[in-house]
Image (cartoon, rainbow, N blue to C red; front, side):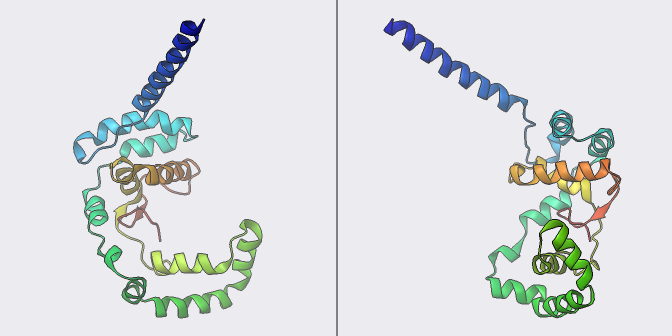
Length: 190
């Protein structure tokens, strides 16, 4: 009886290991160059469908190109070497704060409705809007979907950007974005 129990336990452990391996094999394999990007898109499409991405989003995914400029920008982010005060000074935080305060006052009703609807207070929205897009004045010149897809494919941080890609593709499905939407090197859209 003990041998049978040990065999069953070993069998279950083996089955769990095989299931885990099979699950990993089903995931789209990340890459470090443009060489595997087209294959990755084919592997990623069923995952995206399983996450609720529809036909328009999948079509947008298939139109993406490996964005080498995005990879270069991602690898060359010197701002990560700065202290917070140095970073804020470099990004013009004083001007962003001044403009943000003005917008918070002049657009108070809008921010109040956003907070009421989504529970997000004006401060974080204004800070992100100002820091990421200079309040919508910096739109970027890269294909946003290609940038996000490249970052989701890249082995450096795919777990972070994969959810961003699902969300962007769902926005394509809803007609909010298109396959040709322009944004920054990292997919932000002003």
